[in-house]
Length: 244
Image 1 (tube, rainbow, N blue to C red):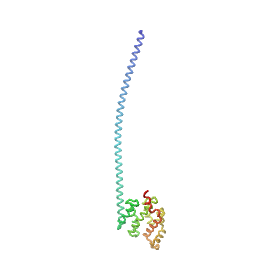
Image 2 (image 1 turned 180 degrees about the vertical axis):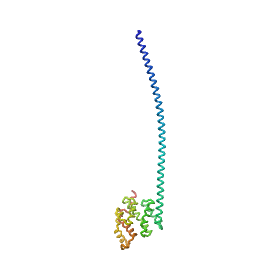
Image 3 (image 1 turned 30 degrees about the horizontal axis):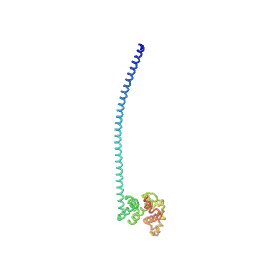
Image 4 (image 1 turned 135 degrees about the vertical axis):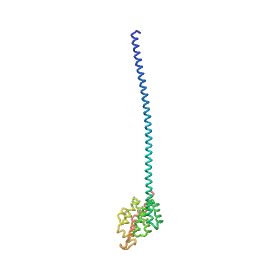
């Protein structure tokens, strides 16, 4: 090897070494930067995990508080409803005792029958009986006779309601209107209780022989008679359909 070739070889070797050293330094620097980045990322992920955990804890606490508040509101509503129901029952019982005084024992049995066989609650049965009784007694009808008729009217109302898919309370209100002279309220049930029909029924029952003799008590008896006869298909419907 001559001197010229030796110089070239040394020069190449030195330059290559320099490049290798520079590449090594660059790789080391990149490694350090990558390590630093990973450490920062790890700290960030740790911070994020802590924040998420704290947030979930806060959300759980909030949801717990909301659930507690909802439960409290629901409890208050139930309590209010229970108090109202108790108050209604007390008022109904008070009226029941007054309008059926002297025959409360028998009236209680009527109410029990309505509850057991006509799907009524205790307060409902007594309220319906009392509302009809309160209309019949002022007509001059004896209290016991009025009570028996009230019982029949309420039973009929339950059957008419079942047959026509209407609430018993609505039928009771229609019967009350009819007892006060309005015939239109019973027409929807196919029952004709217009004045002429009522008067003729009174004569047929032998309650009076002239229009001058007719009383409100007689009109009530005639109304019940006509209602039962003209709604024969509905009578007993609640018992027939109670299974469904």
